[in-house]
Length: 455
Image 1 (cartoon, helix red, strand yellow):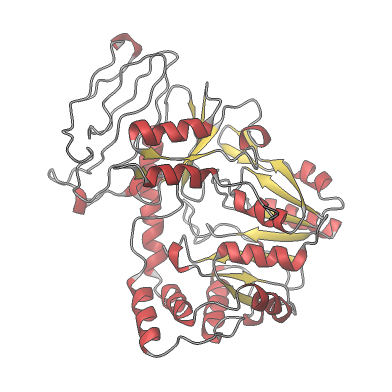
Image 2 (cartoon, rainbow, N blue to C red; image 1 turned 30 degrees about the vertical axis):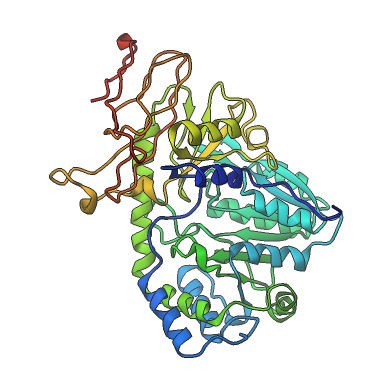
């Protein structure tokens, strides 16, 4: 039919197969299996019981706008006024509102890749010409080529920055942000910064470096954020924008035409979540544990390229000899009960960001990667770290799917690679499909390769 269309999501394709397949571990989503904060849930119920079910101020409840402004002022180097806060129905809605406000058909939007594909699709829906600049692989992760960015932003309308980055975890330094802001100012380009992972970094800082630390209130900068990640509220669909002085109310007119505001009881939950400061501290520790588990499992695997990221909560891995990341992801669901995110063709990260490197998949540790602790340690406090069978090539024997065994090391036989397996759910449920008895895993025949046997 005659409709506007955009590229479909490969993650959704994998997820649909996974939902239809029994006993699958979901490591493809940027979502935790932890519940949302109790304070947020209680606030929502209280707001509904109190009758807050009517049309809201499309700019956002004054209490929430003030709470967000105070939170950002305390977190960053420069104060943020409530008059610059626009509440949105999710982080993605915030990005879409920025696109609707700032981009017209035919204008150039530059994004760096690898990147969450919805951002490019939001620009495509505006009729924009989307151009990509690939993050450059380094020994310890990635970097953004600022000289090339300077060249690409000549005549562009917008540059979209995502730091910490989904999927690589690349996190811009303050010096890099100063350079990016200077380039945008020089070329009179709008700078939209997606900072939904800003609190999820792995050092002692309270947040990743932000444009809110350095930009002036009248700069052509829009910062988008969300409650989904740091507050574990993916299903609540609540986010915000920080916009330049004087633009909040005109942008609210666009919000009125797009989604007409956010449910007031959801906004009350957002206020409670921000005020419960222990929520973010807990999820940061949770993700740090997941990062450690992922790093221990992935480091040294033959044919797997991985560096622990400084931010976000994904393992972004390259796999030698792989030509079809979607095919691998689908096969992992069918044969091994594991759902991972394949590289997106809309941004072609294996070409744009990893030239001369192998294709990639993204594995999330927000949920079950870090799902172990005293409450799930059945044997004298030993962490209940469990894995599924890895997938191998070159005919290497492998453990049986569904066999729950402690992680040791994969086969290191030359020419053989093993996908990192996930943790089983910390719920006490058997890893084997219903009606199937887990069998003991087999050993690799090539003992001389340095393979440490499965127990």
